[in-house]
Length: 380
Image 1: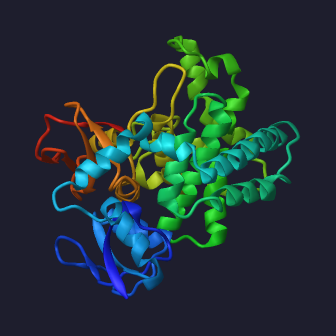
Image 2: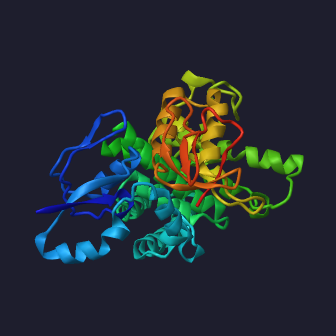
């Protein structure tokens, strides 16, 4: 059976590799004769494997020969191919995702779940009922079932970014991100459900604050700012008497506490903050910063990770590093716009400075951990 070298970006599940694939430091990524799955393809992208050799069935040799030039990696024009794909129809990476049937299905399911979540959250507040808890968890599981893995979920959420339904949509996003972090932590299902509910209910106190204050586009008055800062205590008061795991109640109260004691409402320090509250705090900040808001556009994930690196003393260290590392892994092999106007591809992470990876453009390789004159402006 013949073989052909295929760009990683063009690999499809079901293809079988004919040779083992190694990183540039000669570490084995996959064995020869491996049948590719979506997860394995993502793994190859993460380790910046540009191409692999796959078996070509005899009956498709003629067809493969005709298309080889489009799929086989050229010796010196790999980035040209990437840029050609990037500029196709002047659409960006995320715009292309938004056109797929998979994203449309995900968006419809997500939107339906958020609409249902509005009623469920109000039932907890107004009817003092927790009977909706199982239904809420089922909706989260249904959304997650529309994604292949955590990296795919981040792509889906990035494509959903909007500024309406800030409390409800944001809470659902935080719950989904908490589920991802909990999976990375290896939590059992019962514990994972507690963490997901901590994310879903963390902002429930905002339902006690006038909507015009929550969604105000301009600068808040001092009184309005204090109203906003009261939502952790309001949320805890709503949940305190409910038949819920205490960590869910503490997440509502503590998700704005910070590891160094600079948070609110009680200025708790590291050991005093519930571990699940620390997870929710990270998910809450990440989603808030990457989402569009009435008063600003969403911030590029690399810039958000850079903020986390600058402010690392605010968060539980091991949780923060795990989140940053695994989140940025999602963007290896992604096209980006640099601050100098060049377009390139993220090919390698710097483990000690995750927000500043190695980026290859048409003309140059930039190690952003050494060149601080250039930043990643946006994903494209």
